[in-house]
Amino acid sequence: MITLVTGGSKCGKSSFAERALEGFFGKKYYIAAMKPYGREAEAAIKRHRLMRQGKGFETIEKYTDIHELSVPEESAVLLECIPNLLANEMFGEVYDPDPAEKIIDGIKKLAGRTEKLVIVSGETGSDGNNYTPETMQYIKVLAKINMLITEISDTAAECVYGIPYFLKGGTVS
Amino acid sequence: MIFITGGIGQGKRDHAKKVYGIDKSKMTDGRVFDINTSKTVECIYDYHELIRRLIINGIDPEEYTKEFVRKNAEAVVIMNEVGCGIIPAEKEERLYREAVGRCGCILAGRAEKVIRIICGIPIVLKEKK
Image (cartoon, rainbow over all chains, first blue to last red; front, side, top):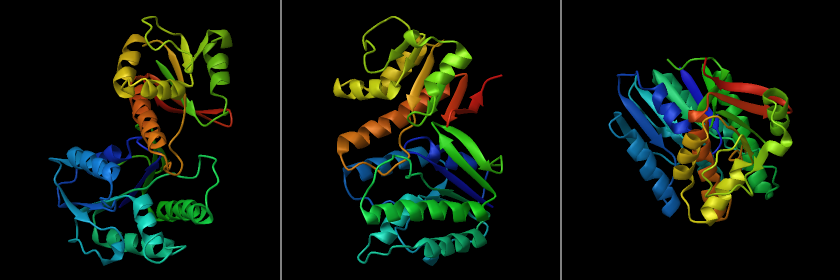
């Protein structure tokens, strides 16, 4: 069971994703893709940690290569988030212009082992700005990954200021 | 409270006029709205611009918005949808964008009805029956 949560910045994607796993009583893992570099990243990580406190998640930090992860079968995973994961994959030591397939393979592998997989992604293509070719490529690949995840997901929702708008499926039971 | 959001130029104010009968002269611009007023408004648009001014004036936009929705429980609030883009390079822009997101959650949480306008088409995201 795959659920995709997308949407803009600070619009309640994480809380929605956590709520999607509220009723799950098995082992829950939180895969954190954000690198803890810089004050703002540290603050965001701290805020997300506080939000998850007491909700029974075990945190795994994994900034790239999610296909290497091995979680116990029948557990639940919250993967947060594709925009960070993609940036880490694309702009590592060597520029990788299109790691979509690699990321999707990792997701399929996780989905095959877990009871529930909730993926937090994001929307980056609607600010009307033109950026460097690498950044434009990033925007396109992120959109492509979102489409590919939606294809294999049971539920896909866009969060708009805290309200989930269902693009596919209609519940997150 | 009615909360109308959506991208730039999608027809948010037209919707407020057409559906809620608010004359454009009764719509208050977030750029000039008196931050310290105790008066209520019928309709405020470009609320995100008010958020920008709050930040410049050292006022916590989230606390302000919580108070605003208490005072203006009957208002129509119009705000651009921002945050569906690349994280800005400038710190001030990043903080502004995050503040708009959080304040948007407060407005949408309080509103009886939340509408998103795209190409002039309203999509109801929330409606309290």
